[in-house]
Length: 165
Image 1 (cartoon, rainbow, N blue to C red):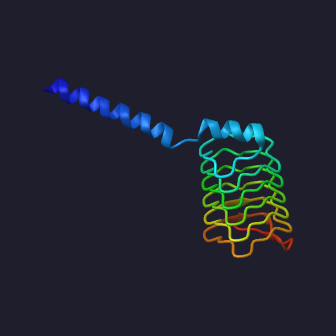
Image 2 (tube, rainbow, N blue to C red; image 1 turned 135 degrees about the vertical axis):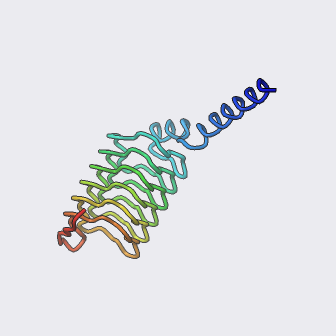
Image 3 (cartoon, helix red, strand yellow; image 1 turned 180 degrees about the horizontal axis):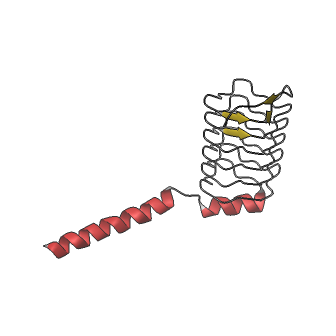
């Protein structure tokens, strides 16, 4: 009886492990599509490592980039409208002129990031870490910034914001 219970327990653990691996990480086919075409609307790129990539002017509208590593990535002019970037690491990313309207950036790290002339209309910026960022000319109309940590950041009006972070 102990053997049967042990075998069943092991089978359940293996099944859950295999199922969780495919359900909680990016799709390899989506990553390949992005790299080949620079277009991947609605793709699942969650938890992917795109650090240092050149995705300038890519179309990632509606894509899931939650918890993705986008550190140092060139996203200049990229379409990220309605994308999920919650928990993403965008430290040092170039997001000038990017369209992030209605994007979910909740809890994202936006440290030393360039968002000049970016469209952030209606974006969810709750709890973001916005440190030493540039937002000159950015449109923050209706953006939600509750609990955002803003330090040494150049805001659209050109004023520096200093808070203890």
